[in-house]
Structure formats: C-alpha cells, structure tokens
Length: 293
Image (tube, rainbow, N blue to C red):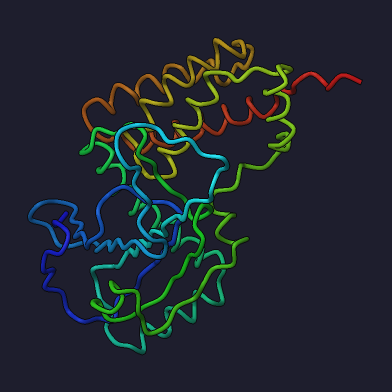
C-alpha cells in the first residue's frame, strides 16, 4: 500500500469502482492506498478513504470527568471508502456496456459489491495487524449507509465524482450479509432467549462465525485453522452424534496442517467450506426452551 497522498501515476480511465459509506470511522487515516499482490507486481486496486459530514467531536476540557444533566446526541462522521480497479476499461463505450449489464443482472451487481468489500476488508485486516488493535473492525455491504457501483476517471472517482453509477437498494446490500436461511430462529427470538437465561451462548457459535468470515473474505489459510478449532468446539458442546461432522476431523486436520505452510489444496479448501456449512446447520437446529407461560 502507498502512504496517503502518494502520487499514484495512474491513467485517467475510465475505471470501475464500488463506493461504500459507513456511519462510523474505519480506522486507517484518510488518503489513497495503492494495493498490489506483490511488491513488484502490477497494481490491483486503489482504495480512497475520506471522512465526511459531522464536525470534529468535542474534546473534554482538562483531565477530570464532567457532570452532565442529560445525554446530548453526538454528531458522528461518515466514512466513504471507494475501491477503484487498477485496470481501465478499453473505452467509455465498454464502461457503459458493463454498467448496463450490471443494471440488468442484480446478482452480478451484488457480486461486484461483495468483491469490493472483500478488497476493503483486506485493507482493514492489514490495518488491524499494523495497529495491533484487536477491536478494529471489518465491514460488510449490509452495514453501509450507501453502496454505489459505477465508473469514471481515476482522479475524479477518488474525489467522489464519477461518470455514471448505480446505487444498490438497501435490500440488495443487506442480502450480501444476511444470516443464512434454513430453519434458524428469528434473531430476536434467539437474542431474547439468551438474555433471559433460557439459552446459552456457546463458544463454538463465535468460532464458526469467525470461520465463515474467513471463507467469505477468501482467506483459506485462516478459514482452515479456524474451522479446526470450531469443529472441536462444536463436537464438544453439541455432542459428537453428528457422524458426518465427526468424520470430518481428519480432513479438516489435514487442511489446518497444510495452512501452517501455505494455502491448502483445492480439495482441502472444499472440505473446509463443506464442514463450516455443516456446522452452521447443526447450530441452526438448536432450539432454546420455550418462554414461560
């Protein structure tokens, strides 16, 4: 990545982009970041971060807490993240045709947003490691205030202006990260059951979610390692009556061992994906006791 403000020396485009706006700060400072697959490789993308909207938060005077009579609503910033492809369209006509095709194909439009979110999350993951901040977050299109997909010249897109774009409906953006279907309880029912003490929050639930996040972000090494831990926790907390899950131990162990040295082979990656899906189904089958009459 470049440092913010570094001259990227890029052609004018047009380039495709996906833009997200969030009602919270993402972590890295504002600027433009050049992403390469390798130090001497071709540029893959430029990520432009810009804080918009609310004024700077008031700073408390002195070092002592203040007495307050009521809670005032604090203005919050809006963080705009624009993921710009490094490879330009061959012509404006090609760019127009690309966007017109996305407008006709809602699934392809959602896929474009999901790919950009994965690129943004790779940056946020790098920031979390660089800042040694375990609470630094990743994001999803479902959490965005706005998601836009379009094209424009490089400099203008980085500044938030473009030639043409589509704005995803909130329902489409939400579909990218909505909970997986099936026989799961409604989240509100499960939340009430946990908070009332009628159901337990299991350690394996968090571990399976972490494995799912690694799969969605295309992190096969981390997914394999996380799946191994999650699988042991699922079998311990739910019981080893699921023969398919119990039988997956050997292959998931192989995937995790391979991940210590590099990306697992394709068949091991498929095994990880299948096992995570199986663990998710096992968790969805759990039912809390009914509420008291």
